[in-house]
View 1 (cartoon, rainbow over the protein chains, first blue to last red):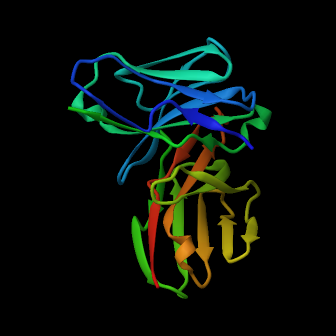
View 2 (cartoon, helix red, strand yellow):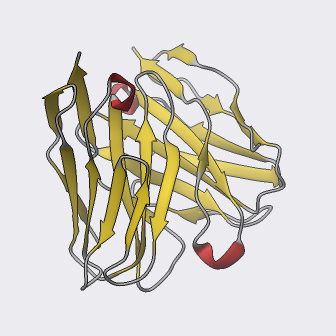
Length: 114
Length: 112
């Protein structure tokens, strides 16, 4: 069974702090994604990656960056946290096959920025 | 840009009643996926529809993909308390960039 592990379940940070959210998957998946989930807005794609050292912007990349130095690990970075980045962050992975493969999600990190 | 709208946002039903959530895209989709998120959990893949007019069933759940591949629905027959959660549709554009666009989700509450 695919396992996607996010390093923290809950995180509280202060405005202006640099925040790292880590995600590791154990199924050798090529694709990895970062979403944020807010009530009434569904899941919105922040960044994604199809390969090591490769990244592409999603729909809401402003205020975020990512890093993928190893295939199994995809990090989301908030360069200077702001209160409007308080949200649930979900990491997901999928195989490359035909772009039709389902997403496997981690348990999420609930980030609060005060 | 491509948008996927999902209605209703919330639905409260009595156990045993049926439930339907609808998903509409502003553009033609190459495929659509459905996910379920239990309270406090993460989204879990349920099914994918690819063909125009496709209908798939999983026990009491029936999934449909519209003829024009711009809409989809999930129907649950005789809801149970285990059906509680948020159901998301996610559409992939016909340009096939690899990105899924998620709907806002429908949260289902079932009264025993």
